[in-house]
Amino acid sequence: MCEDLDAHNGPVRVRARPPPDGRETRDRARKVNGAMLLPAKAEVARQLRRYRAWERAMLASPTDRTVRATFEDAGYTLCVLLGKRCAREAADAAERYLRTTLVAYLRDQDLRASRAARHGPPTADVPSPAGR
Image (cartoon, rainbow, N blue to C red):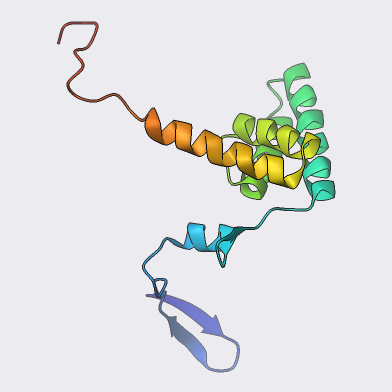
């Protein structure tokens, strides 16, 4: 529980509710009735241009903290738009999304997800190269 202030009534108790079907809220935000929601291509293009511009600025002056922070913000925005955890992955996904049709992009995403599931982390049965 957390407390929030109401302008008229003072503190108000707010309780977060889990999703009714038990799925994570992140999955609920990305899918509606089984269909994946994707951002408008114009917005993705705008954010990708912004990310690339700040990337160049950051590479030109890597010690400037303001430039670095703005670059990281642009990367975070791409991550949120495309549902990726890494800014480089998000930039690559944005480029793929912009150059393909919607159907081709979704098919590619499904293929990538199935490959990642098949090639998961190494199992404990495999001995390490160090012999431990």
